[in-house]
Image (cartoon, rainbow, N blue to C red):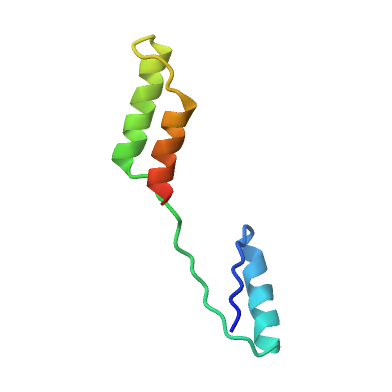
Length: 75
């Protein structure tokens, strides 16, 4: 068995792709879960951090530090 993973950016394409798969007699699974969703608290904290930076209360972070945080969030 071979698995094909497709990221569909335009939701309008989904019915067409499903019809094609059905006509070929292929089984498939549609997964509409998001990879990661930010909570209200995380968004609020991000906006506060941005404002603190603009107000000169904090300095910019090193990209490697930011990348490490993002990798932890997505992995």
